[in-house]
Image (tube, rainbow, N blue to C red):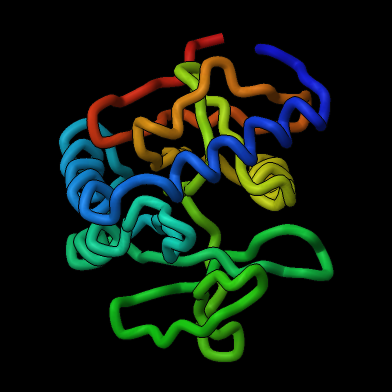
Length: 197
């Protein structure tokens, strides 16, 4: 694990964001479908009825909506993150393909907290800006996922799978002691697994 300064992290964050936005739209569509296939082939899922969270893609992220829709039809309870601005962490609100989404903080689509029930996730499908082969994740810098993972660890066990394009891989991603290491990262061409401690 490479501990780095906030400037190191910001440099990688900006480079990763530009790299992803520069990807061709048709390539992103094709690779998103390949990520879905790779995920369903290689990821061991919890029992049906478990709560699986995903995300509504923005800024050129891998489109996981077909994947989470498929998982819903397979009998999973599905949810999307909701940004709890005052607590600087995430809640997870139940989602179905019929759920009306609205634009929340940072322009991210999310369920309406007045209409959707909060749930606790057993399995989280997580977006990111960058990752490395050791399953370290870099997000946008708010720390909300890391704080949420830390809170969840206090009350239950769960698994995390990051979703990204192979072009988002940086080796190594600079991290600090508060950054959460994912269990897996799935791209259109590879599956990375966290090294056992």
